[in-house]
Length: 331
Image (cartoon, rainbow, N blue to C red; front, side, top):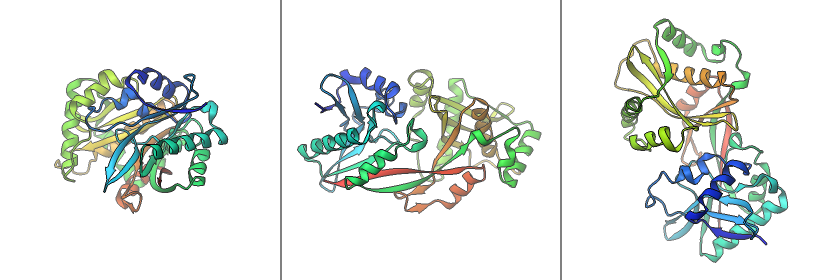
């Protein structure tokens, strides 16, 4: 008999083992080890587990409760980029997934939710394609919106892969190589602090601030995400000119770029450190045998506005496309 259980702290070990070992569309971004870096007061956690009553997990649903104009809304956990139904790959069959949706909606109605919003795992981060889940959500009356994402197919790159860049990017990379700029991993804590300073300057031009504090980045590097995060920088001599954070999903052969930044208030003349940073991470993960390098979305306002400059920049590195999908329904 299936049952819905609200997540409790004592389930953390079992939750994370399920995400890591059994789920067909789970990554460390849905693990409680990752989600718990957020202070408990930041979100109102309402994560759920669906099991068979004997302790076998069929599905985990990382989520939060929010209130919007008097409406009680269940939303994929706001501490991660995506979530939704994280399903045991042994039970990724139509009748099981339908049962999970029925139980989930029954729980929501019983607990007086008015709406549900599920940002499901994008296909490039799934061990099994999510077509069945997407179909059954539509079958059960969910609407959805789509956001355009871009990634590089690293398996298609051979030898000196600059041929896949546009002419301007090729010229910039070669100029940086001739000028003896250096791309390398950031390993020292003070280098992470220097990256964060560059990031703050880069975001300030948009009147924005970093999502992660220096303390959180050091926690990722030194403790929480040792196997899933790396930091890289571009240097001229000892001076850091550009830097960024990469999330790694080795079980999928996928890397995802976070916050690749340079100081917008510096004049680099005919050089472009951020281009060399893009080139460096592509080469690093290609050489490590990864399959894909994700740049993330290039849209705003739930996919209704395309950032043409951003997608053009990603295309200049030979990127191709995927869709991030969010499903929603009024109950």
